[in-house]
Image 1 (cartoon, rainbow, N blue to C red):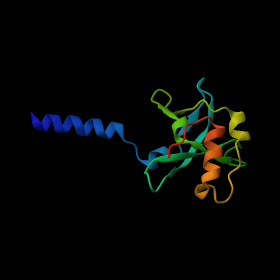
Image 2 (spheres, helix red, strand yellow):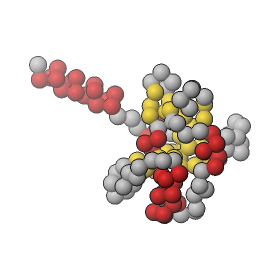
Image 3 (cartoon, one colour):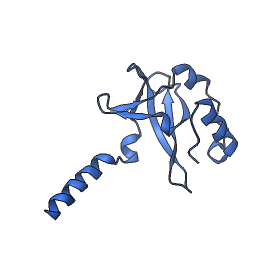
Image 4 (cartoon, one colour):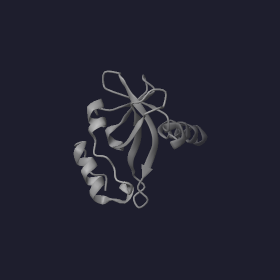
Length: 124
């Protein structure tokens, strides 16, 4: 019986976790199912271990002229039916998002500005 419980817990754990390798490249959709872009990569806070941002690639054609912008990780939720992430962030919000400075990942002020722009509570 204990082995059955262990296998059940192991199976549950596998479904509950995802590798960053599998997140990179995953599509992002609007609530109505419109394709907005894809996850280029994740940014993880070294101190807390929290995922702070998904850097999202959007726009362009066949990868040319694409823009990338960090969006708060909590603005995304995985939808198993779509096989991708859904967000309430609009195309206009992505296009008009505050442009990150070169040192954005080290700038606490920019992180605050970004989270405020998306109306998201801070993760820190």
